[in-house]
Image 1 (cartoon, rainbow, N blue to C red):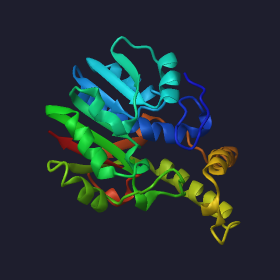
Image 2: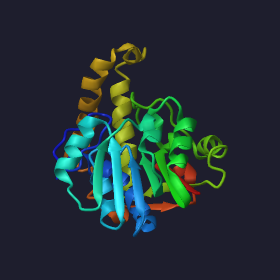
Image 3: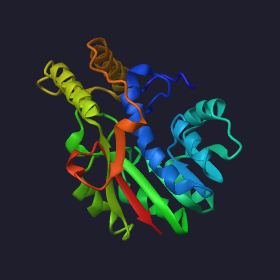
Length: 259
């Protein structure tokens, strides 16, 4: 498993302090696996690659793309016969020149300045009869600021964004168990205590290089304190589900669009 450190943008695979975050992320990949068996899959913004490796266990072929530094780490840790890692900016999907039966992009769209254009690019990579699956945090359930997110949505807002581009789209949610939700509430309270130290919100004036150093350290500090207080649950895949109900309480929103 990888030992890449948490950066604030990328989630490490083997860090015990981020086990809840990781299982939440993998819930979307497990959902995608139910649609990927024997099919060709494009994973846009694959990060460390552990989700792409999961897809490659069932898919006929997986192409996973991301920035060069992510791809270098991923390719070294997840060799699979059916899996290819390729360095490519997610804004240049047209350069791929091919289509896939399943196109997934998890926890990426909130980082991008043109989310509707990104959805259109994903759709263009999807073969007729295929499926596009996208996840993003639910704004109503976000318990902390993320300086790398340009925008977060509610289910209604995300649907309004997606429908003009993906007219067959529906919205599902990644839901957590009660102990996961309790952990998220505790994390939100811990973050709020830290933010009270900056009542004038001067953090918004910090240079990006400072944010890149401070944010991941604070995120780790919060999780470490929760772990020390035995607040961190021993979560498994069974603590998460993807379903269409109670979207206002979903941790993440899932766009599912047949082509």
